[in-house]
Length: 317
Image 1: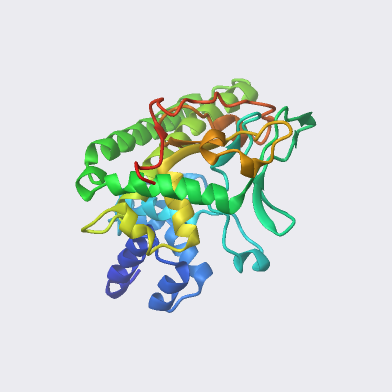
Image 2 (image 1 turned 45 degrees about the vertical axis):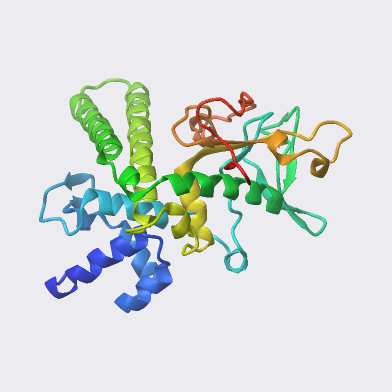
């Protein structure tokens, strides 16, 4: 990267971490959007050089810090969407809202003319014992009200307390070192490849979890303006930025069925929904992310409103 463009690249990472659209960054750099995504995902800007399986993590002076790179990745990595889907407002709680009876993510869909979140009912051939469906606008409104109240507490001083970030950074470094050490120690030992692969996969899972934890902390921090609070930043984010901010703030939104013979609209949303802060430990996402092993049914323990980590709407809402 020529020196005269180094500042532009640094600014691109910071802009994306702050939730700016890729299209806007592409215009600034006179690049295509796909080119910008490739740039932001390129680890060469961390000072790394990769040749095949070989990695030199200190090949040259990094252009951005690890925190800047990781914060940008939260907003770079997202599932590919069809052209038609890009024209629609994204479902705000995709991947966050889950069925209390089976633990699986609620799927955005339609019921008549209403947009909904609903349980798929059957998961790997097993039927959910209490599938739930809820109107998307109703759930979004409830969760956003609670989240804005929580964000209003995240003043800059609290969000930029580096102790949590330092701890997450250290956990990631330890996990990466453990994985490297394992691979180096087992190379050429002639041990059963299956046993080695299992050990490597477990260590890689720890790396992924540690990286996800760091990225979540960094994801909240950059969108908070220099003055004011996270609730004020909310208004400046697009739909995808808001969804990503909620992923950094919330661990899970648990939704249970309205019950037999009752329509969902007749049951107060507060009785059907629990909003849980990230880091509470109520919900383990890992079993649902193992492609080689069906998650089956994993009911989520229904928490009380007074339980630690359960968020509720501010008084007066």
